[in-house]
Length: 630
Image 1 (cartoon, rainbow, N blue to C red):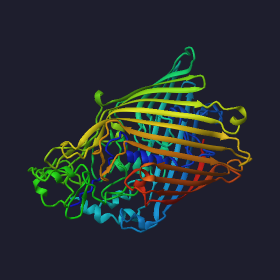
Image 2 (cartoon, one colour; image 1 turned 135 degrees about the horizontal axis):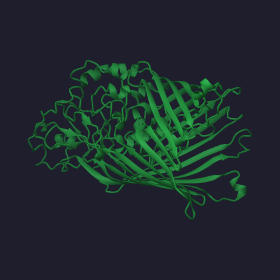
Image 3 (cartoon, rainbow, N blue to C red; image 1 turned 90 degrees about the vertical axis):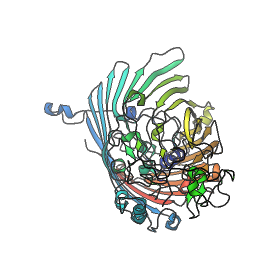
């Protein structure tokens, strides 16, 4: 029997520590945001600042350049653009992947992506935007070699390899929303992305859209890894009041209708979800990869060493991570199967209680967390459309002097799309997942630092900051006397940053400029316990999980050559992710470019932060062609 969990929940920090790490990695990997109709590769930094609303940023300035004949006037406001990209990636050391697959094939990725954007300006008060994605990836030896493991994990399938080999293909309408302006009110209705955070790499105030980590790692920027949500999204401009300028209030209402037709949900080989289809986009499909038992591509490491009080170990040598270990420690049926010294209970209590370990929820015959398994979690019920399951929020914006300030509240009934920590039915093999209701209270600021003019010409410094308070965040709890294997704590996340934006640097380049970013991120667990543990890796959380981002980029020959260097350093484990890259544009056009990049994952702790992905260092090459059709 396989005891590995098929998911990797990092205990419940609200958005998954693993998800945050994956997003931090993905944001450094793509040089162009490619917003609606944006057909130029960006300059300087390989990390892009996001606007407060992707919908707002996506409407193009329109010009009546289409045929002027009366019968074609209705096309005058239509603009169609997009890009076609091909990316190839090679594992730097296939031998380092032995924990994940028997394959030693060097190919890490071969992805073809076509993005098509339609901007339609009906009149001054009505605009429409839609974005389609068409993605194809070939079968990978990484997945195919895992077929025997897939078969062993399932009762009804001899192989899940064919699911994994089509898992990342995507043919769908991604964004589709209508903008209406009525006086001071601008209303966005439809499937869209709303960005309330300031951070370039860490999700702090970015609380509205769930993250698709199974698709994102190694391929997309932060915006592309966000999952659009169907919402009603009004922005109401307010009059100036005293020193407060550029005032507006922004609202969000998400009724829970969120269809998602990606294969990663529709053809989920584990059959995890109730409500897939009409509600699927509310939930994170991968925690953090397509599968975590057996591993799909871009997975994190399993526990390979027993941690006293955090994991259990059977005589077979299998490591049983939280929450499974409670039954290993307590139930009589496991007496004599623990290695000496691995059970934290007193001798008299070890394996002292009779348990019912043959129960079944009878609702998931496919998964290793399904019917009658050691941990029968069954399907995860995605909350529906009832008012108590709605997500909603409000955000206030103002400018006071040179400072831009925002404050927001967001009611997240989906815990960022994560099902939280598994809850044990004591003395059984049954567990439950619930999507916890999280309240997010946040503030952000941008402030140009006052420096002498002679200095500001060369170092235009901007200070950024944001902080979020989250209440009642779920955590897996390895306290053997906690018979739910589940606890809660409030969490505070904050980020401080300094930016150098488009600095004049004649000592470096006569035809470009210099941009740099430094971010410090911390996630603080307020009611910290040493028994809070990351599921599947049996690793304690840090009370203060600190990471630092540094990015610098420049350009030569008027953006024809754009080198950049990005790195993320995590204090716990002294882990680092390094992303040197260069973008090359031909001097005669900006319609296409080539990007060459290395992804280096280093550190001393493979069960924490960016160290989760050690062994998955890659070399990437991307060719992108940008087009305007109309």
